[in-house]
Structures are given as structure tokens and as C-alpha cells.
Image (cartoon, rainbow, N blue to C red; front, side, top):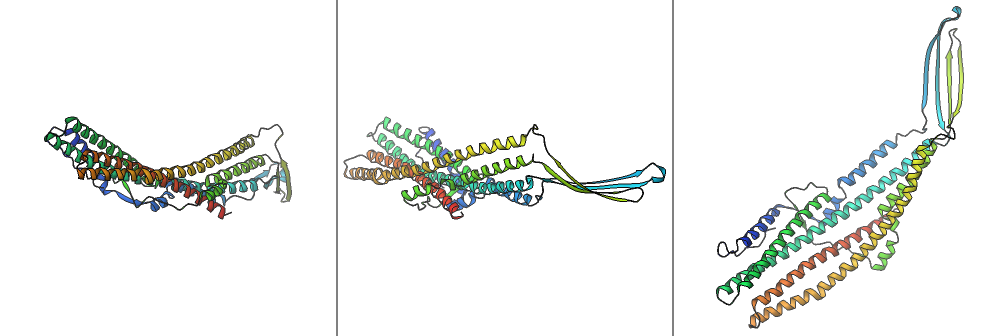
Amino acid sequence: MAHPVTAQCGTPGRVSLLCFGVLLVQQAILPRAQADAIGFDQALALGAGTPAVAESRDMLEARKAGDQKMRGTAEMTHIFFMPGAILAPAEAKGFDMQATITQGWNLRDLGGARRESAGHERGALAATVRARALRARLEAARRWIDLATLTRIAESLDARIAGLEELVAWRERALATGVGTSPALTEARATLAERLQQRLDIEGDQFAAATQLAVAIGQAPNQDQLETAGALPEPALPDEAEIRRRMEDVDALPDIVAQRLRETAARARAIEASAEYAPVLTLGAQGERSGLGAWVAYGIAGISFRGPGQARRLTSVAEARAAAASATTDDAKLHARAELEDALHDLHHAAATMKLFEENTLPELRKLVQSRERGVTLGEESYFEAFEARDREFAAVEGAHRARGAQAWAQVHMWLLLAELAEERSTQ
């Protein structure tokens, strides 16, 4: 984006600091001419593929592959082979051997409890993938809108700076012809310096916003800063009554679904931990060959259990986590409800702000500018009064850009949340 500022420096040394500020702004802006442009829809799509989302997907795939190898029984299979020899009496000397195989069976189906717990954990991971994808899209949308808004503000400031440069030139000519005053020229130069500083600040904000957008879409920031392409998004939303109705499905938001499944998985792990301490039935067989060549077979049956006084650390820890998970779910619901209410309030506030700008502030200031310009033409008002009106209009335009950016974010925020609510209900 080329910068249109061309300072009227005048006599060397008179406004050297002002000219230096103009050149500094130009040098800060010009490198952005090589920036990459990205559209809003593209940013949303890339946001869902960030490393944080990919991490959750990879974890889920790894869990699926690993859980498929889980055994039907949770207890160990034991195989023993014991060769030996009979040493006495002499007539019985010879080779002897014993072979034993046993299998334990948890009487509370620990293997089944583990498989069920793993299934709930995979469900929670799948919901986490979706929740992270939503948050990533929201972050990408917010950063794109921020950068697009700053770009529009920067363009408006460029126009204000150009007007102020013209004003400084007029003041200089007026002073040279004896119809102007030195304080008026000083004031114009000071105002231009302030706008140059403001433009430089905006450029810094643009750089930061471009960097944040790059991170939000999973790209490494570099010297070729991103720029936005296209208009601000205006997604279609239902009326407030319908929004309120859909907001009652707050439990369907991905964050809540994921947390609810984590709570279920925590309770399943508590059951699994309790099964660790259940009695274990051991069944098996043993074969023996004596030194006299005789073969003997035995059946094995036994049960092992823990005494009532033995500590059950795994169970206590798992049950504590399950109890905490319930409170975490309730907390997540509160935050989700607050987010929906805030999003709805932002819609109302942004709409009211834009309405004020579009129906009152901007039209009235345009009328004032037109009136002052007619006054200049008729000789009733000075150029400086017309300039002041135009500058006020530019300032209002910058405010309107910020308000439009806030409105776009409020609309997109609500749009994405409602889309997730609808998708969750359609899969149930």
C-alpha cells in the first residue's frame, strides 16, 4: 500500500522535524507493498488447521490406534517351565520337569472397565478437536477483522494527513502575504505532527495485527506482512427471538460437549481404578514328568484379594478427579452462557453505534462540510473553517471504521457459535 503523503517542507531547517516525521511514516509503510493478501473465508479455513488443532487430531488418531490393541482381559498370563533332576534314592535318579500355565480373571471385569474408560476418553478427545477448531476459527476471524479495520483507518488517516499538509501550505502562504499569523501556522504544523504520530502508531498496530493473523492461520510471520483482501464479513443472522431460542442449547457448544465427556471419562476412570482392587480368580494347569517317566497333570484354581485395610490410592485420586470434573463442567457452562450473552450484547451495541454514525454523525458532518465549502465559494467563510469541518468528518469516518469492525466481529462471533449449536443438534 503506497503512502500518499508528500510533505511541504519549505525552507530548509524551518520544519525539518516535521519532514523527518513524514519520511519516517513513509519508510514504515512502503515495505507493506510486497505483503501477501488473504481473504476472510481463506483465513477461516486456515484457522481450523493450526498446529493446536492438528495436535488434538494427532492425539485422537494415536489413541484410536493404541486402544485397538487392548486385551480382553486385564490380568497377566503366567507360564512357568521348571526342569530338574531326582538325585536320591539312586534307583529313582533321572530327569524331572514341571510346566505351569495360569490366567487371572478380574472379578469386576477390569478389562471391560478399561475399554469403556478409553472409549469415553476418545470421545472427549474428538470433542476437543472440534472445540479447538472453533476457537481457532474465532481467533482467525478476530485477527482478520482487526487488520482489515486498521487498514481502513490508515487510509482515512492518509487522507487527513494530505489535507493537513495542504493546510500547512495555505498557512505558510497566508503568513507570507501578511494575512496569516505565526501561531496559526504553528498550530497547523503541530496538528500535522500529531497525525503523523498517530499514523505511525497505526502502522505499528497493523504490524502486530498482521503477525497475530499469521499465527492464527498457522503461518510463520516474516518480513512480508499479511494484508486482508475483500470487504468486512456480514454473515446473515436470525432475529433476536430465534437467537435467544438457540442460546438455550448452550450445552451443545463444543467446549461444553468436550468438558461433559471429560467428566464422563473421569467417572469411568474412577470405576476402572476401583476394579483394580477387585478379587482376581486364577485358573490354570500344571504338568509334571517324574524321573521314573510318569506323567502327572494338575488343575489350578485360586483367588487373590486385598485386605480391607490396604490403601486404595488409585481409587481415591480418580474419585477426587471425577468430583472435580463435575464442578469444571458447571464452570464451563457459566462461561459459555456469559460468552453468548456478551456476543448478543455486542450485536446490539455495535448496531446502535453504526446506526448513530450512519444516520446522524456522518450525514450531519457531511452537511457541515458542504455548507462550509459553499461559504468559501461565496466568500462568506475562510478555507480554514472548511478544512476544520473536513477534518472532523475524517475523524468521524475513522470512528465509523472502528465501529464497523466491531460490528463485523460481533456478527461473525455469533454466527460461528450458532453454527456450532446447530451442527451439534443435527448429529444427535
